[in-house]
Amino acid sequence: MRQLLSFLCLSLLSVNVFSAAASAADSDYHEQLNLRPLPQSALLASFNFRSNTTVAEFEKGNFRFFPRSLGQILQHAGTRELHLRFSLGRWDAETWGARPWDGAREGGTGVELWAWLEANTDDEADHKWLTLTNALSGLFCASLNFIDGTRTTRPVVSFQPEGDHASLANMHLLYGVLPHEVVCTENLTPFLKLLPCKGKAGIASLLDGHKLFDASWQSMAIDVRPICPTAGGDCVLQIEQTIDMVLDIDRSKRPRGNPIPRPPSGHDLPCDTSKPYHAHDTCFPADHTANQDWSLSQIFGKPMKGVPSTRSVFVSEGVRETRNPDGLSQCFEIPPSTELEMALPVPEDATLPVTITPETPLLYAERSFTGHGQERGGVQTILRNPSPTTPVDFIYMESLPWFMRIYLHTMSARLSPTPNSTTTTDQTDLIQQVYYRPALDRFRATQLEVRMRVPPAATVVLTYDFEKSILRYTEYPPDANRGFDVAAAVITILDPNQEQQEGGRRIALRTTSLLCSLPTPDFSMPYNVIIFTSTAIALAFGGMFNILVRRFVAADEGPEGGLAVLGKLKGRLKGLKGRLKK
Image (tube, rainbow, N blue to C red; front, side, top):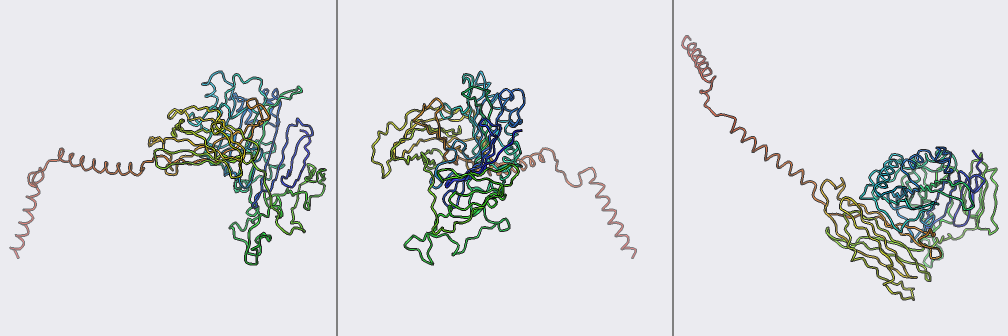
């Protein structure tokens, strides 16, 4: 195994805390941790692990850093490229800004899976897809085996291969989603087992289920793709594992012995003293993330820490520091045998809290249900372009369950300019292309892909109506009154500077998932009907059975009736004789 070097790079807004890699660009293993302070005492932590093996070695069964358990599944199912997502929570774009990795490593709430399979026919691809989902279900302790035909679609333009494929002639893209899947620590453990050190060394040792699933938002991603160098050489099969989470610094710093959150006292509140109404009894809360003291041991419960370059940095002995010429970032080279420890104290000259301005995303998206009642409804998606000069082209994809029967003729997009907008755009140019594949009841989901454009500094509202189906009573889940989860919409932003359909750089984002309420019967009625009918049948059948079987006779007409009467007479005669003798 090659010797691994460790590096730590820090900057004002994003902190590349730790990375380990081999010396060459085509290294077999690489890992890094990026920390980025966010407003309102939030911290984005992005773990990234990347390893590869040559295709020739992979076909021979020599996996090296590539996990054998996953590699054998890919070989058996004929998978050429794989993308798997586990996500919880909601990314607050209004407060936190642009998504990490441009949304490329993000998934909707629950589990998402899409893959390119090599098959000659659609039926063969469906069979391999079923094999793949069942195998991944056992590997990651998830309910991926429930991704059947009703939860599977075949996107046309929303997803493009990230790897280098010689030909796409026999490649089939299938996409499945489980919005109701609950991501927990039993999914994190198999994720860590795919790493070379099984989470026992490197930055993976910082990952703890209590910290990860206490985050406000978290996403785990696995991407497998072939990479072929342009200058020639052997193609490699690369696996990239990513974990992103947004931690609350104040909540993470709370000691384990004091798990109950308590409000801070008045003199501990960070106040914005620049406000004219600031006084000893009046406080306007300020964003104090940039000047707040924290450390990796407090955030993750283990050593390894990072700070902005403009503040004092205390590191372990043996760590070598290198500052970039721009003065905005600094890196630390960490020997393999050295345990990294770094502290982030409060600056001595910090008079006012420093406000962090996050990066503005290219597009804001909000989705919700409209209408009322249990028969019909509608979906409304609000798309806002914050740029005052540049329009945004994107592909909007919905994967809806079959019981949401949409009316395609009701789909419309209207333009709602923002107050700062001075441009006028023809609303007929908002929807440029539509691909629609209707659902088949209990067999296939609804697939809708719309290519749209949002003008500069404008807001576009996309709406359509749908009808709710009535399910069979056996098709309702145990918590039917809670509703049915609808998967998040996938928005793929296209780069206007590159060819859109030929692998141009694509920025993806997901909307929030929805909760659809369907007409639900009163499930107590079957119990009441069973009790009522059982009682009625018992009374009717019991009475009729007695009438048909039993025979009513007098007491002395029975076969033993005469003997009983004779015995009574003898007893009375004996009693009478005894009285006469006395």
